[in-house]
Image (cartoon, rainbow, N blue to C red; front, side, top):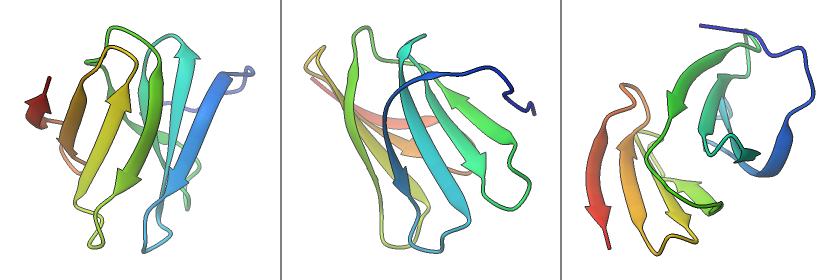
Length: 89
């Protein structure tokens, strides 16, 4: 997808169990970015929260990613397709 060369306002990060993907969640813009560790490129951009993303975590198999936010939602994502599977409010 894209490679980031400018500094990002990073809020936090997590790494998949298989260590092939890295997630960064950002203060601005309100996005969650999934990077391929091997290529160092952003492979997915997840947007769905209206306020700061507070934390994220991969499922043990790396297929699912959950993010929680100060907007009082938690979103379960398919980490391969980027589609939201479930949103809890």
